[in-house]
Length: 264
Length: 266
Image 1 (cartoon, rainbow over the protein chains, first blue to last red):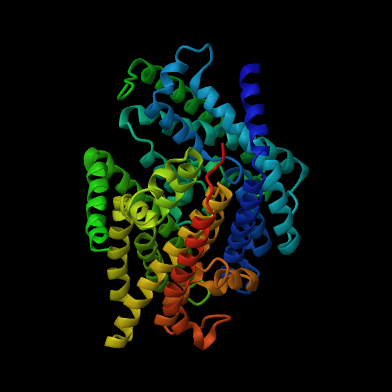
Image 2: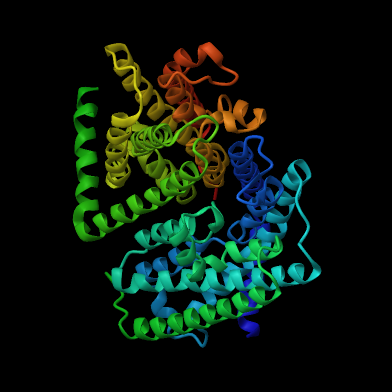
């Protein structure tokens, strides 16, 4: 395990080397967060509450929404696997006493930890200072938000790895990155919470694993789920995570037996 | 000059052939892009369906805005984005130097030898959605309106290409430029919404330093007779002139950066 921690740590430290990049990313992130909040302010257009959701709650949701997806780059996991396949590096990994998917996940989680501290927390703090942000609904919801947040990182990382491994069959990871973006746009709750979705779509979306990436952590913070529901959905999320982990393990085993390094 | 012009379509054709070698993968990629843009638009549709209008824009007007943005972007980006993103690597590895010794403009060689057919998906979705939006939006059809529409679309493509080129060209001086693209795409995501929903500071930035307001929000507001903040009555001519202005600026900056280019060192 300490090997993977070392990979993550080195990825974290590598990020420190590119300071200009940090500044550009920080300004980009700040603009994006400001804009997402501005869109909700424009939509509310003066009315204090829509469908039982106040503007303050919606602004808080928009700010929290970026906490996970703002830090992790699913595309580096998908394209990391795709690139290793294209260049043939993946063959070298089979010789090493470490798992390739776990290596890719560990390095991206290391980078995500860096972005969380350096990009996400400051930008959310700045926008929260301008527009205001609600505290967690209760101490219980606050604690569970952290648990849901960690689960969110696990699920998005596993999903990205799953998408990346499909490249072994498609031999291109480009379309997989885009498909993952499509899913996150619509089904993670990143841009719109499910309570504004048309009814049947909302129920379906709330039970797919993508919902645990953005929707549930933010909904729990806001106290939209009571204690029982919070725990039940946490359990369900763990179930999805276990299923995805099983899927990644299975796909990697199948993939590693059929690797054909191209053009060698 | 004529010889140079004759070689450019050939360069473009060569790249097209190389891209079409894996025809299945090419079209799978295009379909994935169409689905992703459709999902972004579905988000706007859900909002418009739930709330009626966003900052005074109804659903079909937002569809026109989105499609104009997509089409203008694909026209400008196929001439600039992937080519300019590679410039950083070309500077770092020194492969740009071999380009400088060719008897053809380095810019023209780079752009045409990498003219990206990958934007076909964007264009197909953009044209389809635009046709549909134009059939339901209340449009004051006239020759003048159509001419303005076409001019504004070309101008939007020019603004996109010029901005992406200016970002790429900074690699010639600083050796790194790709981090600035994340800044570009931060603003790019905003530029498919009506500009009046943003705070004044962001509006002002999008009309000057990062001129992506001219990609769609300003010209489409003019076409639909909606007010444009900051620019007011000047919005109409500004949307048409933004393209040529930023292209001229990008050309100057490209020449300046190329003159300053000294390689990545080592």
